[in-house]
Each structure stands twice: as C-alpha cells, then as structure tokens.
Length: 99
Image (cartoon, rainbow, N blue to C red; front, side, top):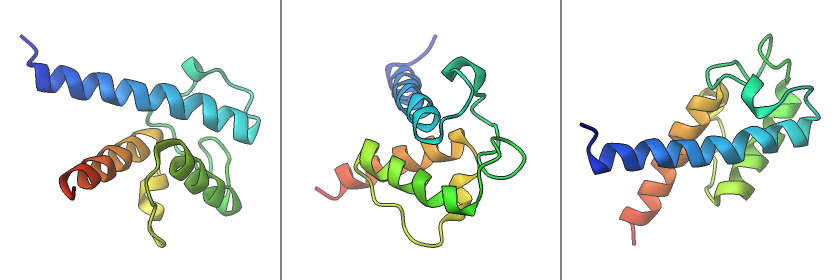
C-alpha cells in the first residue's frame, strides 16, 4: 500500500518532470519528445549534447519555471533531469519551511 505522503511525492515529481522536459526541448530546440527523454540522461556532454553555455539557460529555465534560486557553483544539480527535480523539490520545501 502506498502512503498518501509517498503518492504525493510521486505526483509532485511527475508534475515537475512534465513541466521540465517540454521546456528543455523548447528552449534548446531538441529533436525529442518528452517521452524520449529519460530522467537519468546526462544534460551536459554526451547525453543531450548541451555545453557549459547551455548550463546557464538550464538554470534560467529552472528559476523561471519553478520560482527557486539556483546558487552559483551548483553544477552538480545539472547532471540529469532527476537531479534537477530533486533540487526543485528541496528548494520548494525549504521555502515553505522558512515561512
């Protein structure tokens, strides 16, 4: 049996992923559909082929879509879609907790 908290987290992750994938495809004009992008694909380098200049656009994407601030020197969150989703959830939770 799945608890309500766990199901809520699953639904929340899915909502973030369903926003993030199409936005990345649009911003970078990627030749993929959201279903083509696995959540663990590398964003930079050999995965999607994005480079360090594209990293700034990914940061802007996350900040504008999810209203969270990405700190400087946080390249580790740019590893994959999953690491971005983990970051967004943690930052949103921190904002709620600080209120």
